[in-house]
Image (cartoon, rainbow, N blue to C red; front, side, top):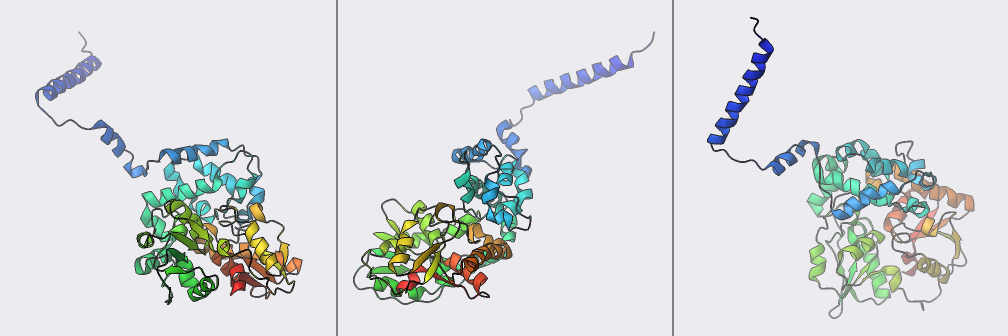
Length: 390
């Protein structure tokens, strides 16, 4: 009689498992939380939970029909030396698994978040918001890799409490108890001349008290570092009746972050219509629309009316208003790839030369800085409109 080896093996395995089952039923053991165990499988894969709003935003990419209109409007893509594949690639990235986002870091951080592409999208896909969301995800799950991209920003945050560096000292005298706060923002306190803003506030009789040592977190949020608003509680502690900002990025952020009971106004809104006509002597001037002031906050007509009121002949760029092109500084590109940012701002200078205009006006400190640097060789002057009032 032949022995069926395979049958003996099968019965042995069955007997072993039956005995193991009986043993486990007799000996008490700790019951595992299967849900937590399941989550643990994904820890190494850096899977991160999205909020409901973020999920809706992620799925918004499915509306894209790949019509090809948005790449035609993307100046950063055209001037990235093929390093940024443009809006359509950002949409493609949104459909990938989260761990794959790290492979697309270069695209996420070369987008200037200007949202110009969204103006031409027939399906209203929120491309710039998707880029920002994916930056935030990188920051959430791997902050060390995130800060390795922006080491200077992290250093300034740790040392000075803002991303730009040490603020310039200023002195200000306010008569009486002011409920208005003049919020310059950390960039203007570090890179510009805060005393000039105080001079303008005095001239406009704003009676607003300057608050320093406060960062709204706008530029940090643009690169994806969320929930960082160093010193914002200091601003709230003033219990301001209103906040007057001079930076479009601060204006955009404070409108979102401060309670609705605290009005936030931009400096141009504080300039009375009755201001005396200037002495522009009909000098021709181009106006550059800052993306965060014009496209995102809708302040487009006010600066143009003021330029004319001050006696300048207003000349428009070929792309202006809601379709105005970015200066190259949005989204922290000036930190991530300053050379690319300068190529973009150089486009504005090139167009000014073609039009034979030697003066560009804007109302954003970052826009002014980038275009000023790009226009030095061609002796093209760049000023903020507010400067003309001092």
